[in-house]
Length: 209
Image (cartoon, rainbow, N blue to C red; front, side, top):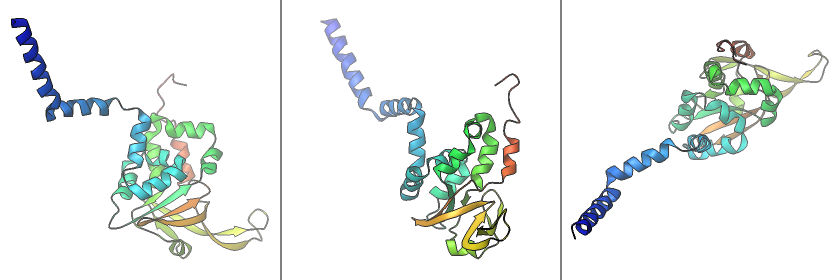
């Protein structure tokens, strides 16, 4: 009888704990700790509904780069009043970088450089295609990017004619789209300064491959 009472008391106590907020918060914390990385990445990319959904679906390479920079995501996610601009390299642009550079972007030891690269792809206010065309440069989160009129034809840049487009650090704007309260400019290359690649692998651990 004593064992039976103790068993019932234990079960009743456990049931109370299982339904309490404290117990639920512990369970939730454990689930959060052991979520797979892909779930965490997807969740981070979906915090800002329409804009994040759009770039996640259309520019996965850019998402990988932007997730290296908290300030870049913040500029997009908390832009309800001011808007934003994103320069989004195509998947083909990332493929053209080659395996080595893609691995460098992912390498945690190159986080600072990847962070800086990402910052050049975001502006914390909307900049339209017309504004880009009529501007000599734009201030991104990473710094100033010069804008030039794109040229088609000619040989080695000689004899060509302006084609009505623009380039940013050599990356040509292919198309522009208004998304939520911002603007996404699709480009055929990264717009960050190419000199940043020189800083990759500068902090390699001795003996690492």
